[in-house]
Image (cartoon, rainbow, N blue to C red; front, side, top):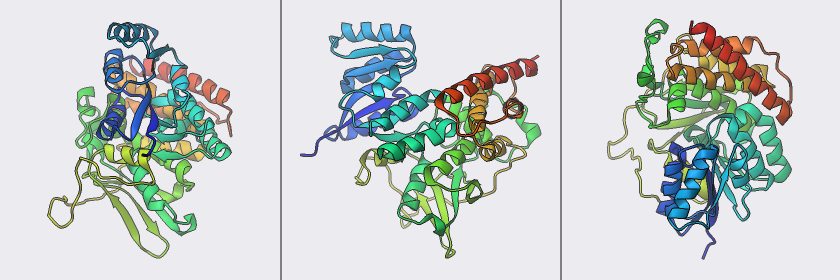
Length: 394
């Protein structure tokens, strides 16, 4: 009998974390949940802990951690260790005996746990794209140092991983990442001025959290994914393209030197790339949908170029990646601040790229930054972006 994978889920209360636990529930003989980590949703963490029986749970918010501890004790589970604070997720990633870490935390906070997991040579199933955007050189260096496995979870990068597996990079002309285009595909810049937070989080094809839904609507999410893909697959930016594909069935494609174009199609279900990252190189049958070309259930497939004038965040991501060094960290931090301000009604939708661009303009990037330098730049960018938000909100 195969020994179950001992799995840590970072960001267990988010969309990816919850769907990861769906995968675990479908194969309880193959996975043992060793640890769970989240920011503050203690009730859901407790519910997950009582169902899956981890050895440790962590909550960044100390008050939430205390409440979780009390609830677990009241349910007779004093044996589950409860950790609190900003470093708690990293401690869970390092939990003794774990062999796989699913990293689905949002934003910059996912970098240290990712490095910790790789440092212990654990398989890292990465859904936290900001880890590579902010510290790609650090993450990839740690992979080379330890030989740890890094498997992408984002549907586009999972597709690209499968398409590029075993293909010499010299034979790849272009990697194409697809984007749904979000809820405002085809809108003009003028029309976008009237977008409300409620409109921006209503994604047409994927059910995601508020932040990533807004990033999808601005095309910033795709810009971050371009940077992530460059690190993951060792491809220069001029060989990574974006195509708007509203049906979201083709997740990535590659064009090869002989003229062939090979595409990866899969249902709109994140459990498919999650499961692959957890079980690779094995492919298993799962109790969710499949595509078929022969029975007529596949939709018409359309592809168009992204409109970077109406959606400048994608161009800003390319600009940050070309500048290199700490500039992508500035891009990511400013985006987090701007999206939060938009969701809070303090700036318009079109103010998001303005905040990001003005923050980037004030930064001279440091090449090959240390983790401490990344932290310093992150703090500076957030403070600067907050200042710009205040100016725009007057």
